[in-house]
Image 1: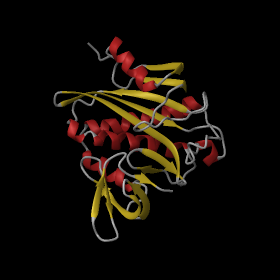
Image 2: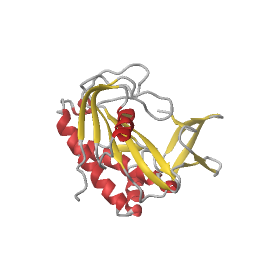
Image 3: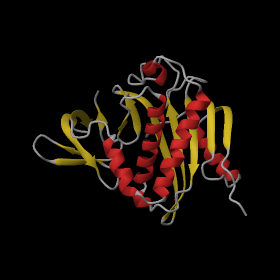
Image 4: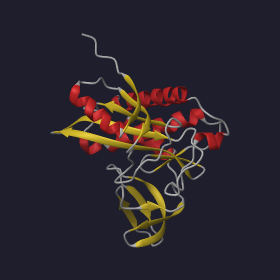
Amino acid sequence: MAAPEPLIIHMEATDSTNREAFRLLKQLPAAEGTVILAKDQTAGRGQGQSSWESKPGENLTFSVILRPVFLPPASQFLLNQALALAVRDGIALLLPPGEPVLIKWPNDIFCKNRKVSGTLIENQIMGSQLKVSVAGIGININQERFSPEAPLAISLKTIAGKPYELNTAFQLVYDSIMKWYRVLREKNNALIRETYLAHLLGLEETRRFSDKNGIFSGVIKGIDEFGRILIQLSDGRQMRYDIKEISFLF
């Protein structure tokens, strides 16, 4: 029997496309690559407890259902890296040639030191296996004004000076996601890690950060196998930070 085809489910509104995806998974065994695509999210989320601002009908807010059972849970940051590369590549194809598009650790996409996209990945682990992953992706496409709570937000329209057709933009990004997911499935981990570092915002640059002890400067040296960022301090010490243990200062 042929494997079921992935669905692209269009919705006018939902609280969160990730929540919608998990509700769908309780009802039927949705095929890998199935997407929940909403014009409006009433409770979109970012990393941790942060929210995701998106004006209805002007941006892309969607979630992709994946089943990376081939990936050990300890290596799940590779999925994070592959998806960050996928969204980065899709956005680069939409913008004028030569426009720098970078990954701000762990998976935000930045242009001109401003945030264009964010991804929230939620995993279900069963035993020693990643049973299912839902990747919620928000991309600022045509929105031109953002609230003061999102001072770094910028859209593709603002960068390129032209509006975008949302379905065309979605298809480019979706194709890029499935391409990089195939690279992950084929276990070409070295390519993922090397390409991720090649596009990492601030690599080998002195940057300002804040952690629980205050503001400091350091040089981003890379990412460890668990996805922690490596920062070398002025005294030579190398620190490792997990998500939400450190903030970039722009």
